[in-house]
Amino acid sequence: MIEFKNISKHFGDKTVLNDVSHRMETGKCNLIIGTSGSGKTVLQKCLVGLFEPDNGEIIYDGISFTDMTEEERKLLRQQIGMLFQGSALFDSMTVEENVIFPLNMFSKMTPLEKKKRVDEVLARVQLVDAHKKFPAEISGGMKKRVGIARAIVLNPKYLFCDEPNSGLDPQTSMVIDKLIYDITKEFKMTTVINTHDMNSVMEIGENILYMYLGQHEWSGNNKEIIFSKNERLNEFIFASEFLKDAKDMRMLEAKGKIDNDRNMDELLK
Amino acid sequence: MHQCNDIGIGSLGIVCIISVFIGAVSAVQTAYQMISPVIPKETIAQIVRDTVILEFAPTLVCIVLAGVIGSKIASELGNMRVSEQIDALEIMGINTKSYLVMPKIAASLVTIPMLVILSMVLGIWGGRLAGTASGILSTAQFDKGLLNSFSPYNVYFALIKSYTFAFIISSIPAYYGYYVKGGALEIGRSSTKSVVVSCIMLLCADYVLSQLLLSPAM
Image (cartoon, each protein chain N blue to C red):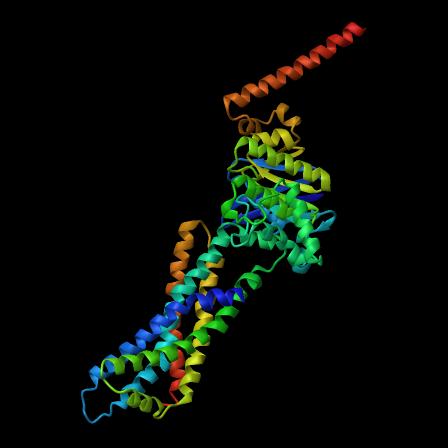
């Protein structure tokens, strides 16, 4: 579990995060959503220590990240995997070398064990024939999968994903979402995902934090989001007419179900 | 080792070409200016030797290397920064400065003085080749002049310069590349800026070192 309390961050005169607090649950896909410039990426970078918050506290499973020394943070970071928006694969390395890199840096495995582990995680992300390819030779979806493989190769407790679906077609996006969801459940990780993608919100949003202008605006899950009365959230989530119609349909369906249940109850009486 | 190969072997071709030509040109131009028949021809070899060792090999070669290596270091690190590869390393708990920057500086400190020594040899050889090929002086005269009042201190001085320049032309571009912000355009800008700043710093260092190390000898 990752908990953050009263996080604030300023860049010069600009306040990017203002007193944000929330709790990211273990074994769940925790989503941070919001419009561009709402502070999602800055919040995520504060959580992993790439930015230092001006105020507030970040707690990883009861241990304050904010109070940790640089050495302690280094140790904790070995339990963190991160999938970047652009995948951030090392250009000069093959897929296999990218994935084996964290093992070479931090594990005491033998070369054979490392090779076996790399094969395992690449198979887990459904990449079996791309070992010797360079990042420039594979598609965007494959890059994301290599990024996930590299992020999970050390069996991390925490997985951070920054816009995992950006630049991907809807079908590939769903594959990536499902993969992240399955991995989260399989390894009981605390997964934090920054996303704009409404499919992801509806499919895997078990714990959602909606941010507006650097502030915590709403939180809940993918069931509650449909019925939320928060206007800003509704404007953001159901921005298009199509999505508004879909929401109305869902609400009607739900209302119909409630009415049906009532009728059934009356009949049973 | 990989960085040594990138920086050293990668720059070998340009260093060889430049060195031979600067030696050859300095021989021809020295001969052109030495119109007095009183001055022996061997003096041309002496002048070529000293100018190549003291100035051309360390300074001119390092200015060229500032362009070749400097832009490579700045754009490589800049690209890693912009594409979040540096962030990815930091997330893993790796000290990116020591992992990415230090090997480049260390490789430069190892390979650039070697390139400068090679440049000295090739520069003098280029001068000998041009001098004899154009009939300015014979090989025997050149070789005799080469050994006349040779001061090993000049070589030490050139090596001290080359170590200083190696640090400048690797650390300044590394700084500009490491701290680049923005996208592809900014990588190009920071690469160019790093080369310009490196060249200016290199010339300043050249003057300061000459004042410090050559003044007592003058």
